[in-house]
Amino acid sequence: MNPRRRGPLSKRVRNAAWFLLCLNAFAAISATVPVAAAFGGEPVHVALRSSTPASNDTLTTAPRRIRLDFTQAVEVPLARIELFGADSANIALAPARAADTTDRAIVADVPSTLGAGTYRVHWTVTSRDSHTIRGDFLFTVLALAADTTVVAAMDADTVPATAPLGTTSDAVARGEFDARSPAYAAIRGLTYVGILGIAGALFFGVGVVPGVQRRLAPEDTAARGALERALSRARVGAMGAGTLLVLAGTLRLLAQVRAVFGELTLDWATIAPLLAGTAWGRGWVAQMCAAVVALGVVARRSDLRRDGRVGPIGIAGGLVLLTLVVSAAVSGHAVTASPVYLAVASDAVHLLAVGGWLGTLAYVAFAGIPATNVADPDSRPRLARDIVTTFSNIALVCVAAILATGVVSSWLELRSVSALWTSSYGRMLMLKLVLVALVGAAGAYNWRVATPRLAATGGIARIRTVMIAELLFAVLVLCATVVLTATPPPIDMRVG
Image 1 (cartoon, one colour):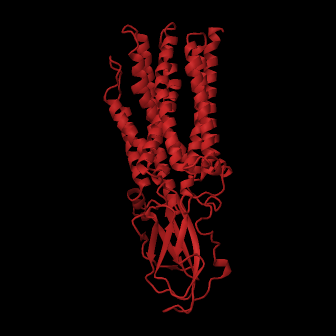
Image 2 (tube, one colour):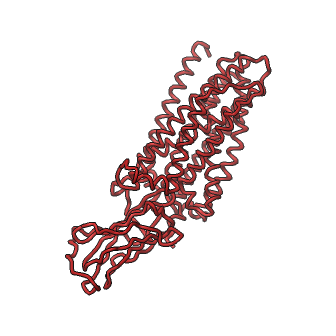
Image 3 (cartoon, helix red, strand yellow):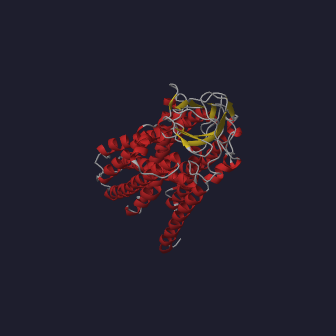
């Protein structure tokens, strides 16, 4: 190939790859909710098991409290019970409180004596994994009830359609904003991108670059300069990932407020119980603090030492990354699984390993390999091979951790093999596994085939092209993960 034509062609290929990556991300994230719908009906994360008074019950004694029992623990500080009379007037109730130590039941006292007539109970609860559901049911107090007065019956037009006990009507079908809404799904996707971007930068800067430098001869100044350039590019990427995470975190708080309270409000008295009284809120605060600290850590320039180490940056970055992955785990399904500590640890290690594999891959493809251009032409293939080989060693450990934690998390969420094809969560999980297999196949090709051929003509361009294809499949894996976080596992849907 003519050397004069190789440069422009490579540039066009790189630009096209970037465009396809962005287009693929946009299209796939936009499709998350329709895909979720296609993979299974109207799942719910927590369901109403029973109520006192019961749905459509007829009472001869006016109730003095309303009790709701759910299939799993709920965030009591966010629970709300409202009572409406025949004229849709809101009847004052005492604040909802936990009925017992399990947080699976809530009660609200009725301070005033109810008159005869039909009443509607409207309730809103948020599960431990941050998903909000709402429901309505009716009950009637007869005129024979003690200490009651007759009130008008509800008109047929004012009586809402109630869902069967243990279910709730689909928020998406009603046009309500919730965890499965496209905007919320996109925000979760951006959050994952930010975490993976920070994780990849840390693994690249503390693992890949120093590992390659230790292989270099002292007199190979050009290669050392290339590594410094790669590290500088990684810092820029980490700064962008941290900024994205702060932005996505802000949007995620607004989205959660909208989903939980039914309206977007910035009233601190309303938001405080969400942040201080729930696992989601505490995880969000920890994540935002870690993102801000990450920006501060990245802003400090860190040059490679002679021994190939980056210094205190690695320790500070490791603590930040640990906070990020744990905070993400406590905001999802892991907090509803049992044992909860195993589930949270498994999810956190899983996300950490994904960042070490796919996050680092992005920096190798767009920071490490391009930086080798400043090296001597004769030494460039060797430097590129050292970068890819060092990354492959890290990736192998990460893939092993992903497989191990994936098995643990899947079992904790599914509890049976048949749930893989009988539940919407299981079917989406299988789709994710297929996509992960495609990513792994591309990585295996680079590891076993493309890397040994780096010294050949065009070897660097070929391995980078396969890396970009690997990242494209990784975007689809990310989108499948976004859908899974909004899909209830089978253990959440049991009403026993």
